[in-house]
Image (cartoon, rainbow, N blue to C red; front, side, top):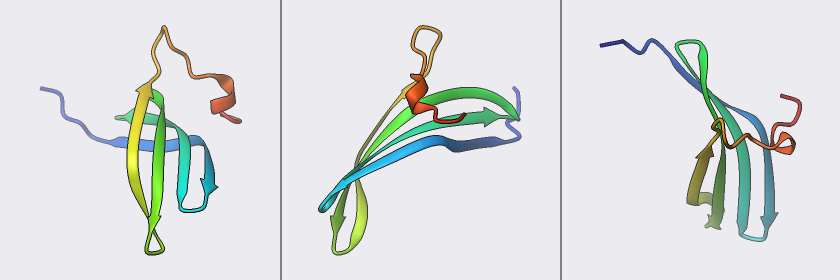
Length: 78
């Protein structure tokens, strides 16, 4: 069995829209497992502000594949 030495995930690009007490963030991410890029995708977060604190209402993501490339406008300068 292979041993996982490291796992890193970070945001490549992101954008947040807010209206009053609701907000949505679209975030393009990459994951490296043992220093090799293993996955990229897009996560959508919906937030609601309750008592001056932002809480995650929902979260959904789609992983990039050979048949489904991330559109360039979600990659910024990456």
